[in-house]
Length: 317
Image 1 (cartoon, rainbow, N blue to C red):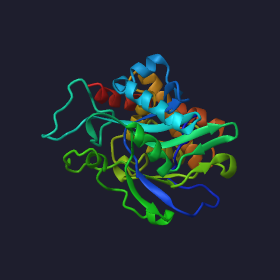
Image 2 (image 1 turned 90 degrees about the horizontal axis):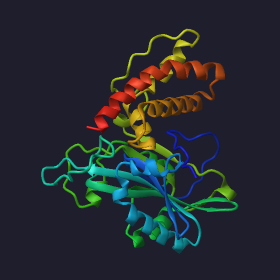
Image 3 (image 1 turned 45 degrees about the vertical axis):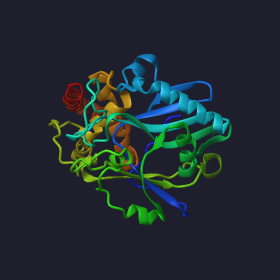
Image 4 (image 1 turned 30 degrees about the vertical axis):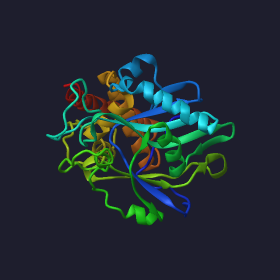
């Protein structure tokens, strides 16, 4: 099951009250464990990873025997197929007292988590014939910690609005959780707010969740990183092209990289970036016409290719 996209604002309709939880949004690569208690399969954001992509996925084979065994043990505790959604991170730590691991490179740049690769669970789901049941935070912890896995750090619990008032700019809590010395100005990507308890989609529909990013990681006009030049395009409104260009940022290229893995070609990364950008833009505008989608995608593609090629070069150094 693909993990639903977490938006940066709530949609229309009432939201549940009760206790919500705010968790650090770890800046890594989405990596899920799908297990029926006997067999565990690796999955990325788009579904189960085939062998070639799995072997090239940020060195995760280093952790796989332990992750697979732990996920199977957790699934046996549940007695049903279990999906543990997590973030693969780490691979480097910029601190003089922490020795690097020579064969590793950081999964993502921008936040330092640890010298070795690590996997942190941020969600879990049990599938049944009637739908999906999302695990509550406490239930997730009770499943993963006994089998040796860890969850992303919690910033707070309480009323939804109180959590949304938390500062978006804060130091990552992961190094402290791992007992590592502090790295100066090691800012977290942001945090995610969602209901703290379990959520049965068959009864309650889609579960609401919201991400709050610090400005340095924003994928819109607040991000002040460089963007490639896009020439004017006939037939497209200037405001629409400008809105698209605002979203063509290095963090979005990084997101495409984290979805597809280091084995992805520049062409595949470009396609993922453009499709993701257009989907976000369509959501924000209440829909794009096909007459706008195709020419806009074609106009953005050369610049997107330039952007992902430049980012790809920094990853493989």
